[in-house]
Structure formats: C-alpha cells, structure tokens
Image (cartoon, rainbow, N blue to C red):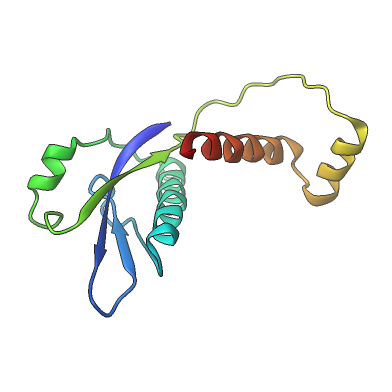
Length: 129
C-alpha cells in the first residue's frame, strides 16, 4: 500500500469534497465525512487503475508540508488514503472447503479476483481498526 494525501473541503451548502494533490482531476464527494473518506479510497484506486491502463506513470506521494503550502489546499483538511498500486499477479495454491468454493463460484466468474478482493477488504478493515 502507498499512502497519498487527500484534502477534504466543505462549502456551507455542499457535500464534503475530496481532492488529491498528486492526482489532479481525481475528486469525489460524500454526504458525511465517513462517506467521503470511504469514497476517497475507491476514487483514488479507480483513478490509478485508469492511469495504469493508459500507460501513465504513477506519481510518488507528496509530503504534507509541500501540499499544505499550496494555496488551493490551505483551507482544506488533509488525511491519508491508502492506495493499492497494481503489481504482478503470482499463482498460488490454496486449500478451501468444497462448500466455500462452490459458494464463491455461485457469485463470481473469477474466483481469484473474488478471493483477492476479499483479502484486501479484510486487510483494510484490520488496518483501519
């Protein structure tokens, strides 16, 4: 995981807006702070995925000091978003109960992707706790 700085903004008659100094054009909104935080990670990972597909270079994270010196971000509140950067897939062998494998197959055509997403979700919950 790589940590990027997100900036949350709130105008009196709007939802919470989130932008990413290292990714111009990557923005999201949420009705609550918690919703904005959750959607920020989804927006950032989706944006990075698109950059990778387009062959663009993923920037290194900026420092908090440098970000907060920029006038566009000075009035916002900074927080960290953990983003998964794409990496090479590796084949592994796992042992699962037959009933679990059947249940996974009934909801997903791609069991590997399903298991990887479930593992990331569990890791993210553990990291947030």
